[in-house]
Amino acid sequence: MTATISDPSKTIRVALLVCGTPVPPVAGPFGEYPVLFTNLLLEGLDHLKTEKAVDPETILVLEGFDVREDIYPKDLSEWDGILISGSASNAYDDLPWINKLVDYVQKIPRDEKAPKVVGICFGHQIIGRAYNAKVGKSTRGWELGWTLTECTEAGKKFWKDTILRIQELHQDIVDDVPQGFTLLASTIHTTNQSMISNDHKIVTLQGHPEFTGPIMNEFIKFRTANGTFSKELSEASTKVVNNPLDRVNAAARILEFVRKS
Ligand SMILES: *[C@@H]1O[C@H](CO)[C@@H](O)[C@H](O)[C@H]1NC(C)=O
Ligand SMILES: CC(=O)N[C@H]1CO[C@H](CO)[C@@H](O)[C@@H]1O
Image (cartoon, rainbow, N blue to C red; front, side, top):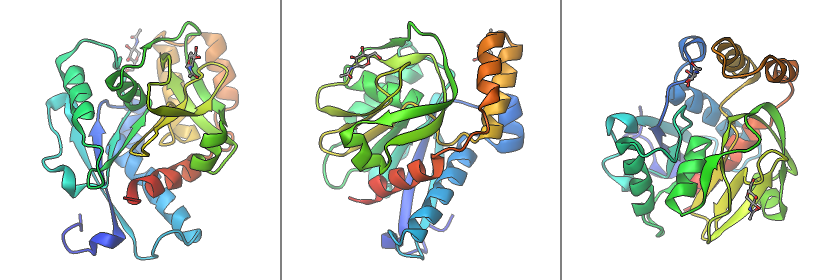
């Protein structure tokens, strides 16, 4: 990409820690997480440009690092943001690559020069675990598909919205808000949908802004066929799968957070 020849003040640099691979009918036609997040953040960047919140020449540089293969960014100073992706794994599992990721997150400095940290779904849960929150399976089972996420007062300021309409795909939750963090949004299923560290260095979201309706639809079909989702859950979530989403607004807010340093 064009990182070396572009003006650093007009470049938003995101290192994506890739923690999973979407199911084949998503990864094939729509792409793996680096593609999904590039597309999402480019839409978010366009949104920021229409809001005149960034210079019109601002570009995005996103590079994926497969942390399952122990591949990490070499130099944190090269990045404005570290974004931790979703995964079919459990954030609380005692696996070498997951333990290493938790340790890595704990060691990211919280000073002016350090990149901001953003966690999506599994990434949200990894950050919860890194900061000693309870992370485990929800007693309510899966939260699936198009969902209304209600922002707290702090959440309204961050997400610039009262309700975030977003696709959900999880049964694991962060069961409390760690010390030093503030809750930004909740659903009935999961209180802790989004949180921010009080020094504004880390932000998380349980839902998936990178998933459009058609992407979600493929996840529902695949995991219903393989016995993960009941017929009832599948039908209910399929009905609303193409409802309008606030994913682009969410992406714009994430980029705004990442670039302000
Ligand atoms: C269904 O597919 C998902 C995604 O590949 C996988 O994580 C899960 O283990 C599968 N479940 C079953 C019961 O095979
Ligand atoms: C501080 C806070 O809101 N904690 C909640 C986090 O989520 C769990 C379960 O969803 C709730 O029981 C906590 O009250």
